[in-house]
Image (cartoon, rainbow, N blue to C red):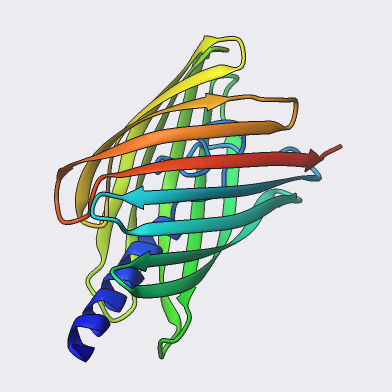
Length: 229
């Protein structure tokens, strides 16, 4: 029994590590989406994001995070709580993100995200590092690509990355599709974002497992931006 609980907690550790690696974003690839954009918030602006996920099999996760633009970089912090089959885990993550516009339509960036977990020794679990690229051929269309790794303390490092496309289907409505790898699993994701007000947006998506151990899941999120020069 104790061994089973410990195994589930370890599984939740890996789940939280990769979930926290999905960074808090601005009005682009979307907070809980796995493929990041090569953009940061405007000078002096901040964003607060919350989302909840439910995986196939019943595992649940809650996320609360915030990020602010400080000089040339974006700094963020997040907390997540996961529960599955009576076992639970809590983790915290930080984010350091830099991005630069190469042309009017192309931008490049990098992001690093260390993660810690409660009730483990050592608490530090690892860091995700990604190179980012975004291309916007039109105001209503964007493409993103990521490539990097999850560096897991005391475990095997994992490749991480993917590609995504966004399209504004109607005023204040964006559709997103992704093809990505995380948790040693290949996924596709489809989602919709509603810009409910000037500074508010709501996201809903479905991630479908193609191959690998991690389950498919549904996620709903709420984002709020404030400040800025």
